[in-house]
Amino acid sequence: MGIKYTFAMMVFMISILVFSCSKSSNPGNAGSPDCSGAAKSFASDVLPVFQSSCATNAGCHAAGSIAGPGALSNYNQIYNSRNTISISVATGRMPQGSTLPAVQYNAILCWINQGAPNN
Image (cartoon, rainbow, N blue to C red; front, side, top):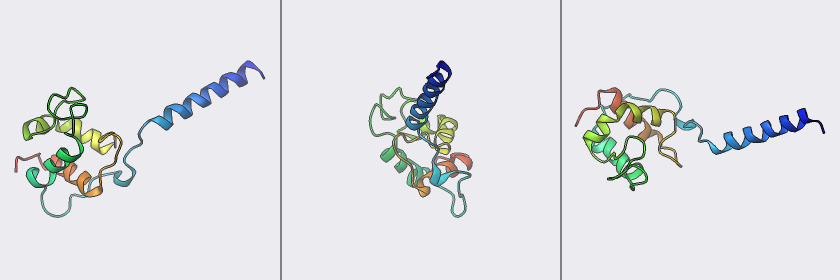
C-alpha cells in the first residue's frame, strides 16, 4: 500500500469520526418556524421549554451556568440572549443531546420573531 492510499484512508476515517460525533440540524424542524395561530406567550409557551430543556443544571443554563450565554432561567436572561438562542435552536445545536418537538421549536422561534415580549 502506497503512502497516497494510506493518507486517503486516514482522511476518510477522520471525516467519519468528525461527522458522526457532531449533532446534525434539527431534521424534524428544519426551515422556518410555523408561526400561524395565536401569538406566543413568554410565560405559558416559552419559559416552560427553558425550564424543562435548558435551565436544568449549571452545566447547561441554570443559575450559575457559564455555558454559552450563561443562565437562561428568567425573562431578562432569555431576552438578552434571544439572538444566540434563535440561531442555536434553528440550527438544532440546542438543546444538546435532544431535539425539541415542533410545538416547542415553533414557540421559541415565533416568540423571538414577534419581538420577544414579556407576556
